[in-house]
Length: 285
Image 1 (cartoon, rainbow, N blue to C red):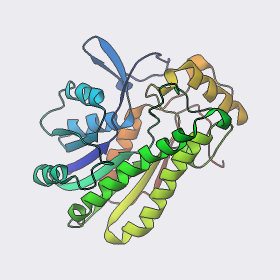
Image 2 (tube, rainbow, N blue to C red; image 1 turned 90 degrees about the vertical axis):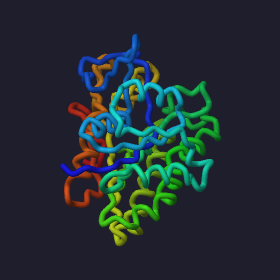
Image 3 (cartoon, rainbow, N blue to C red; image 1 turned 90 degrees about the horizontal axis):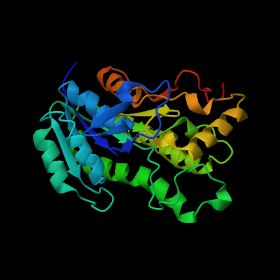
């Protein structure tokens, strides 16, 4: 495997509240006395750093960045507390990236963030009449604006490369909706549509866009009883009855392995669906 540089967005750790029978150990990290579940961005950082690649993390969550530092992943990991939305020209970050990058520079954007400022909302699977209007705008903005800013500011760097791979994580919810899943569907569809449009624009410049579409992922979000209840009800609409205590979940490390596979394979993967064993396929199957 050749040496690469990967820019990763939206890292997140969640304190474990529930361990399912099929929760993989790779999903869990113990830091001091606390066990956390990791999101696909953290899993990707871990996997790439372990394979001697250079990894740049761009995030604004101070707590998650401190936790990532405590994993001691080596000197090839560079973490930046940088809000790409507020800084239209992140010259300092780009300068560091240019000086420290090894091999080709690629991007992995976690376009599936569900965190919002309204702390009263712990479950985004709500009746549309109960959801504050500003949450719809915020959740789309969080997943689109940072990536778009990053891509624009890195453009002059990746223009000099023979091939650049840009991976965007959305969800199967971008392709099939369901009752009370409207808030999840609109943010994922925005990411999905962006990925498809960018592929048309950038492929001719040797910038290859890959959209990874997983379904329910074991990153801590489904530890909440309210969220699990929504997932169980969702399954019934497709003829699946799930045990809330044994919900089929995808390990974040499976997504990280997919990212590595896409970057390391000399081919263009446009879309990849990842579905854990036992879940309804959630496409037009």
